[in-house]
Image 1: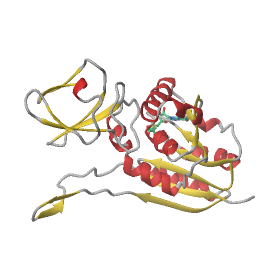
Image 2: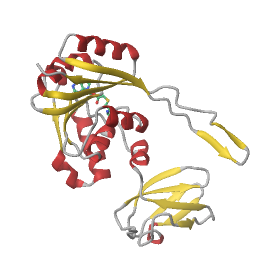
Image 3: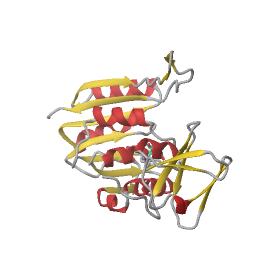
Amino acid sequence: MSRALQDGELVLLTDRKGRRYLVTLAEGQQFHTHAGSVSHDALIGGTEGMQVRTSRNAELTIWRPTLRDYVLKMPRGAQVVYPKDSAAILMLADVFPGARVLESGVGSGALSISLLRAGATVLGYEIREDFAQQAMENVTGFLGSEVAERYHTEIRDCYQGIDATGLDRVVLDLPEPWQVVPHAAASLHPGGILAAYTPSIVQAAQLREACEAGPWAGASTVEILHRGWHIKGDAVRPEHRMVGHTGFVTAVRRLAD
Ligand code: SAH
């Protein structure tokens, strides 16, 4: 069902060249680009997918942003997990509605948004207060303030331990995930999953080695290669540019004692 766009709503404007702008609609305001301006009042009350013309006759299309649009544009302190990797983490960690997930560090909250949107309840450990605050703002900015019922962050060093038991999943994006392996073993129930994102394969190998000593099985490490294709008439070929590297995702399951 299509709902009218409202004052205060976050929207995405795209132009014909593929440029994208995240804007919060506010009555009486103007949105400016080098391709001219458009008044927010011309957008409020309209519908997604609507096209408008700027003062300089450029065409803009208005959308509610997808999670991917939002994550790539939102303010960040820490480097975010990219959407292609968040998607893999959701599947490898098998995140489900109602899952109890410990996430550390939360950084800018990009991965938190995906975990929460998949229906998990997330306890986040982060050592930097400013990042934890930024994460909360980013999370509620996309999912709304009600999501705070399922999202709790604590200023804590995850290497020192996890103060929770009976967890379904532990999801890590921090420099030394192997330091968390014994804590994850103590906090996850049998069958629970530990997943970690690491930019370097050396980190992934060290994590895998740490898991060999404990109650873990079924380890896998993957890298997601995402190559876009240019498709226009007879010109059908890979895009010239791609993101060459982001990181590796390792997942492992906790055995019973
Ligand atoms: N996954 C996040 C980005 C995390 S960046 C996102 O998608 O937005 C890594 C974060 O781990 C940083 O914010 C850093 O402050 C935090 N961190 C590093 N060591 C930590 C530790 N020992 N305990 C908790 N957080 C830690």
